[in-house]
Image (tube, rainbow, N blue to C red; front, side):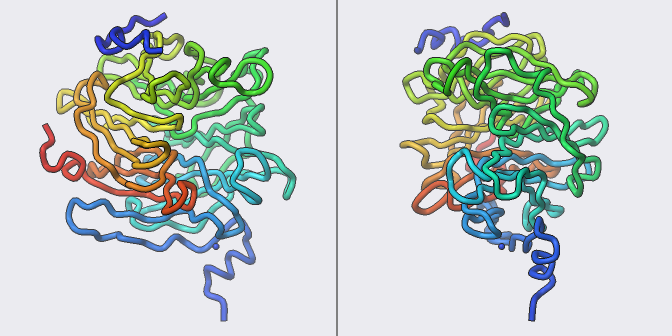
Length: 385
């Protein structure tokens, strides 16, 4: 078991869509749809630009949910999500879809179908969790079928095409595990080259996360050729994301079912094979919801880690946070979207622009999946340390 290295963890460890070309393509090639039009692509300086990448009720899908975003080695942004055909629920006829951006998220290409099964059958293909192997350039995409079986596909051309999925369930699922979800969000590559995919599962029967939910990770030490289980956390944890810390340890950021409504964190000092006791952080309010964590910069420059998640009450006020000390403290917090908002995923562009792919709406959080671009200066009101 990893040693709890943060003072605050020790303190709180007991808390408990005549035809234009785009339309013709949509008819001839069903998995493609019209590109997402730029919105607010050139806002005033330091004001976030917002582009709606997926809009619920369009292009053959009732609802789009569960965003994940990565930047490929060639600089292309890949935005993934679930396309839910007949309703907004977590189970049903659900496909994995993707849009690509080659201009830093200011505009997005046509929608691609990454994977689906059974036509109109109620088969759930979901929980995308992409990770980029920076050494090979391959984009790996683990996902789940009916939240039971685990598969992985890959792209070697920056998301233009995808290999036939390979099932890895036997290697990455415990014998008494029930519900299983990869991600959602993104995975990471450690400085050692290891690929790490954040996941969650329940043990026995139907999901009852307050009694039988756990966070865990998947690992690959051979550039995605094979996958194995890493460590699981203690009970009452759920969807998670990870960031490697400056010293090589890993910080896991977890949805949880422990009061009060704060984010839980755990650490690993053995590459994700084991985890410390989860601890709630008093500065990171979060309802029962997914959230994202992302490295911005490392020493010898400034040490910065980013976080995104609903600031509350409930799934509202999507808030971006910043830590200068590896998540021990989160002194910077700024609301990106004050209305309904839920799941999100963070990415850092080569020029230092921060991107956030997140669920938002005016009346409910699942009306759109939007990509926001903003600067560190906006986040810190020009007062970056």
